[in-house]
Image (tube, rainbow, N blue to C red; front, side, top):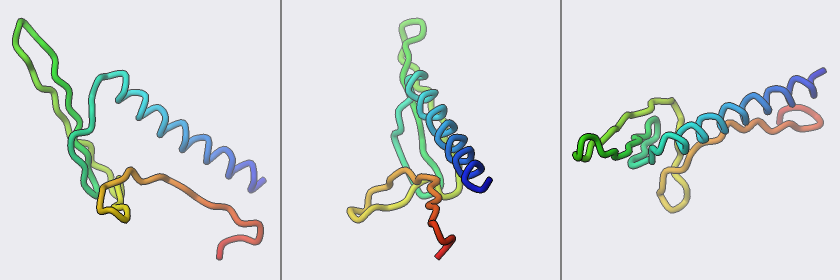
Length: 87
């Protein structure tokens, strides 16, 4: 039963991450700035012959982490299962 719950949980997390990334890609928004708990997305459209900037900020605790090079990388919701339980 635990194994089934773990598999379902992973599928839910992966599906959510895929949907968010797919939605951003389809909308034309690109990440222009990142921090530990936020990212800024923006796109430019032409409306009535004028360029218009659309921009919004997503806020999520623990959204990014710094890698060894000091760059912000997207965090992953990862739960590792061990045969003998947690260590």
